[in-house]
Length: 252
Ligand SMILES: NC(=O)c1ccc[n+]([C@@H]2O[C@H](COP(=O)([O-])OP(=O)(O)OC[C@H]3O[C@@H](n4cnc5c(N)ncnc54)[C@H](OP(=O)(O)O)[C@@H]3O)[C@@H](O)[C@H]2O)c1
Image (tube, rainbow, N blue to C red; front, side, top):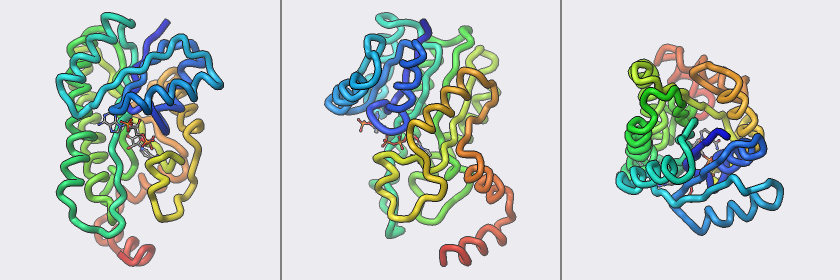
């Protein structure tokens, strides 16, 4: 049986994706920073899905030594990781557009350094094995959006990093993929105060991620098509037009 490790699997997209892979006979390890949330997640999962192949492990990705330990213990005690989905992230919508340094630092620690710690530990064990590391970024990382400085910055960096490592990790036979979800209904996005266009469920996201990782080879897995494609067009506009649109649409 194949093995998948999903960081941030206690809720939202990570939880739904874990369920999808379990249902398709994978050995699934979910981790997050909160063991109680993970145990609750396992209980919830057991209501609808067989969970004998589900493992829950506490792992705060912003703690480098914890990440190193967990990767080795998965490899030695559960099985060789075929796919790692680096999905865990901290999220905080900045409604008031305050420049909050603590918030920037938190998001850098979790979303950026945490992702780097995972990649660093995974590279050591995955080299030469043709395994996959999939990094969950966001279309918000395509460009700077109003009120999204901290979160958007980390997602842009994850995307740029993924593009770069796509080339570099070919040499060590590790596939790098990036996942760019549109608006998905999760604990994180329930904090948003605006209406989210084309909002989809976490199980929709899980289906797309499963299909993208298992049956397709494209570097980027993105969904739903319409909203993400629209943001891809915004990405190539010249600054004057991009800024003008935000001024017209959102009075920014
Ligand atoms: N929902 C969307 O619309 C959307 C759109 C684009 C991209 N994304 C991306 O999708 C991913 C999942 O987001 P979501 O919407 O499913 O959010 P979510 O439900 O809030 O899930 C975030 C997960 O990350 C874990 N986490 C947070 N801090 C952590 C840490 N320090 N160490 C380990 N785990 C940690 C959380 O668990 P604990 O609290 O137990 O640690 C939770 O399991 C994120 O990367 C997000 O940026 C989401």
